[in-house]
Amino acid sequence: MTEQQILKALSNVQEPDLGKDIVTLNMVKDIHINGLEVGFTVVLTTPACPLKDMIGNACVNAIHLLVDKAAKVDVHFTANVSSNRVDSKQLLPKVRNIIAVVSGKGGVGKSTVAANLALSLAKGGASVGLMDADIYGPSVPIMFGVKGERPLMVTVDGKNMIAPLERYGIQLMSIGLLIDEKQAVVWRGPMVSTAIRQFVTDVYWGDLDYLIIDMPPGTGDIHLTLLQAVPVTGVVIVTTPQKVALADARKGIAMFSQAQLNVPVIGVVENMSYFIPAELPDHTYYIFGKDGGRHLAEEFDVPFLGQIPLVQSIREGGDQGIPAMMGDEALTRKAFMDFAGATVRSIAMRNAHVDSAKVAAALEKA
Ligand SMILES: Nc1ncnc2c1ncn2[C@@H]1O[C@H](COP(=O)(O)OP(=O)(O)OP(=O)(O)O)[C@@H](O)[C@H]1O
Ligand SMILES: [Mg+2]
Image 1 (tube, helix red, strand yellow):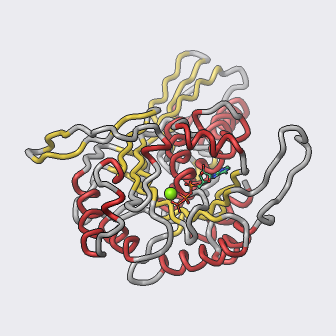
Image 2 (image 1 turned 180 degrees about the horizontal axis):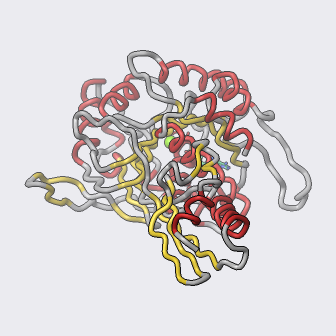
């Protein structure tokens, strides 16, 4: 076997999202050949890539089919997380992708989705931070059981900065750990803006593949301030399936897409989609209606990222400082992992400049 034969065989393996083969995309590195043994590395666009196994199998098949059916193939994976953030202010320059989790309506599960998205991505091998920017109702202190903790200071390039806490393998910081929410309630707009801007500039996030921002509910000034201060990769819109939530989500999409902001929509995720009672596992109840989030995504031609069921343990975990991804319910964890996978695929495709209609179509097929 020669390196050339291997590369030729692997040029038949497609990266389905990017629509090109892995050799053309320069994803194959470090080919080693020793008799019938061949090993190489495939560099993915995200460590949490849900297509990893599929790509791995396709590589093995291609070599067996086109080079030698007795070859012993060892495919190794690494990731070089892509980014297309334009960070002209050099704010958070070492953060490759920033995902703001938003909703029109309050209480639809933004904080729950943001926290479990962060944990799912970390589980997939990415370095992840979670920034709770909900100045009036921060959730991270309770959801991660860090209420009352005092963050440490670090000196970075001679400047004193706040160090994020570490929990369950992710970096996290909440504006609620720095500012008393009871005070914030009576602040006027400009004070809130100043506090938010400081929160963004004074926390040292370091090197991250993904920074997830848990945003306050609604679509107000605070969102404008935040999204103008932080050049984000895009927003994930959380909605529940019922009409009132969808109507507010629509307003959200309109606001984020307006020319002044022009923030890309990474996709829509539907929370509290269905309920399966433990004692009647073959019954599914669509308490808030069916597929509202999916239809919303179709209406705006943005990717639909998944459905999260309504599960008592999700609420309990949130209240007890143990997010669902750290719990023991396999179906719940799978729902969050699938959603996280769809989210990073949408981002990777966007970073590779594939247009949004194509992204939506590819995710729909999966
Ligand atoms: N899929 C779910 N199953 C069960 N409970 C859930 C689910 N999603 C969220 N919850 C619960 O619903 C409540 C509201 O969720 P959460 O705080 O995440 O919403 P939010 O959109 O961040 O709210 P706010 O607008 O106030 O920031 C919490 O008690 C949370 O534990
Ligand atoms: Mg919240």
